[in-house]
Amino acid sequence: MKKKAVFYHAGCPVCISAEQTVVSALDRNQFDVEVVHLGSDKHRLSGAEKAGVKSVPALVLDGQAFHINFGAHLSDLK
Amino acid sequence: MKKKAVFYHAGCPVCISAEQTVVSALDRNQFDVEVVHLGSDKHRLSGAEKAGVKSVPALVLDGQAFHINFGAHLSDLK
Image 1: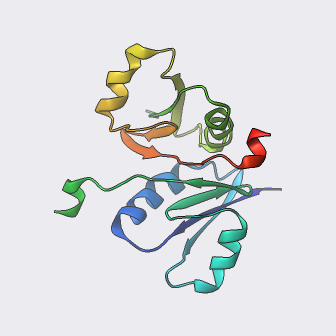
Image 2: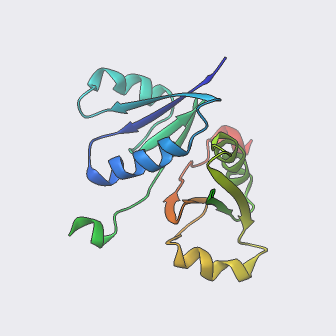
Image 3: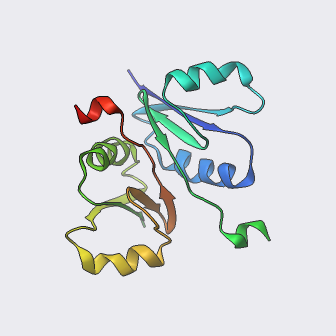
């Protein structure tokens, strides 16, 4: 059975860029991947909190939360 | 040709736990994965800096740096 990977973000362009790179790098043979926009899917907040998510973007791999602080290059904002 | 994924860490138990989960989740059909201990492989520091790594643990996917701030649960330290 596949494990679950959930990528949580809040819609900012930097998060979405991180999402695309990280989500596409995951092994789909191991993981069912879901992307959740916590800004619009507010009913998913409690589940994210239970998984240990403290900030976005975050990736929960098989129940373990990783906070991805890519940060924004100034060039991304130009 | 495969892209390059490099996981940089500095040997702390929390980083190593993150490493194992994240590295094993990557799609090996897309990425050649390398793990670098910046505490012992100090000659790799300049390359990490050039890739945009500011802190460890960090994952560089195809040249893009992601800082993974898993943080430490108190339970991990008991």
